[in-house]
Image (cartoon, rainbow, N blue to C red; front, side, top):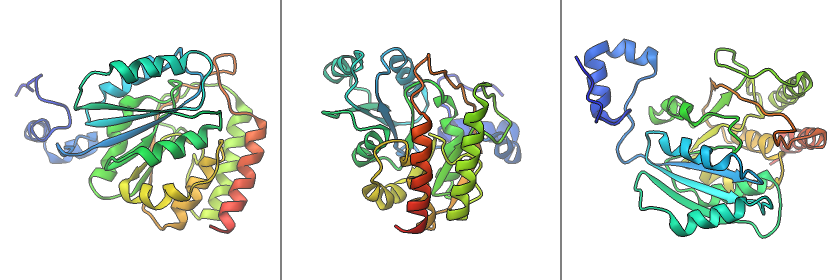
Length: 274
């Protein structure tokens, strides 16, 4: 049985043909499922000085076979990113599968502030946070969506450390720091996550509506704060493996030692009280 190349991946017709070809059990094992035609995914992309990677990243996001709104929040970039986004804002095509929503901060505030702005503008059934630096691959988004669309989860964390996806080998002490922060976060939240600091956090509309308006952190402390508020809300949390193509500081990596200490403070602060 041949699959029609015109059939959209993850559509009802696509899934029906695959189940006839492979069987229901094989489709479940392979992660094949149907995404409802009226489903909307919000992709929140905080942006700061990502002129050299942003175009490719947005192209990759557009290629994900899901109806999307792509929410780009520029945190006062100074490398030409802002001009690029303004060009897109005035020339974007009418694409019902990929609607751009572009927003600008008047001053640099940090990733957390851009994430908070993006969540406030999102309206999808599920929202994912996506960095603009190509460290995370949008092609993996449909696989991460499955527990949410099937109603088994409210939140999905994409873990870089579950071990069955490609992972660029880089800084050992970053790995140690991440493990320390994740372990301490787990002690306060009673979650058994392997990667609390991951960018890939997918949340249903209910979770975004409950947690988003209460977020306060402006920099990388947004990760432990968001995790603590999700845990306190009693939402069903899944964790799935993802690949990771880390970049060096020469390539533009921004997180530093100061952010690690800020994350420690946030873990304790939001772990103890709302």
